[in-house]
Image (cartoon, rainbow, N blue to C red; front, side):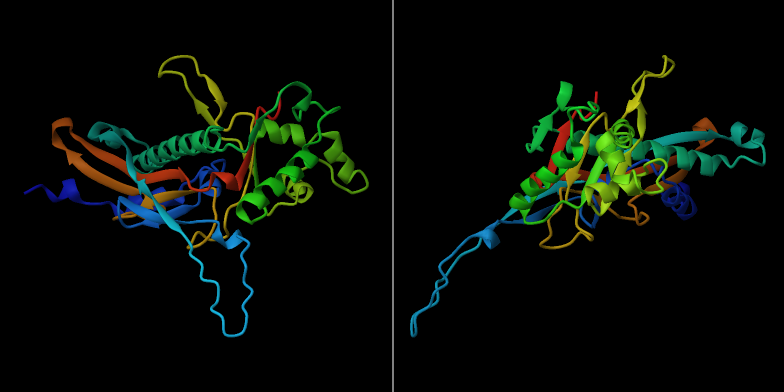
Length: 311
């Protein structure tokens, strides 16, 4: 029989975990979270039969034209993601009162898992092999070329592309911070505000310019250097832009670029599961944070991607 400390889920630390978020992360905005009760399962995919033109004329006494509609399925699998850290008794005994090592450790582990999830979602949302409605810009087509480029027209044109594919106008635009920095100084955008009292163009102004419900600036960074080496920092979302549709609420018969199927057993509402257990051999408490999820593109044609949007 295991000791109870080895199987106890620390509810207090779980609540700490859900309270801590880096506001620069946008994974939830791109792929809304869908709580699930099974680690793997199927979900339904409706066809585009609703867009089909049909003969619905009916003569008196005749039968109505009988039609068929199709339904397919796909699967998800919530892979486990976990990090742990030991808190030796000596560290706890020597910590100043201003430091809560349990909370600090839980927040650090949680943020690192958020970081890895952000990297994973970005890798899928920026994959032109999956998001085939895409363009790689270069030279004078990049939005950093203030003389030749017109990002307003470029984005407006691709709204029609998405509308024709999924029957919904895209309502969200995500740009990395380098793209945001370029757009806020683009002459064609500045022109829109020249007679207003706007000083520096902010995200809400760009939301208005591009006529979207949601405008996200993805500014989170990652460090790809090995531990102990010189830091190698870069933007997770690169120099790219993504126009897409996301539903107000994830549900049945709705279109979404992607979802995060998140297993919520014994966890808080965000899916995080925090354990604290004793390791007497190390004279330490172990704090472990877990998250089970599958970040998946479910409707690739609900998005348009610009790679290398700026130089």
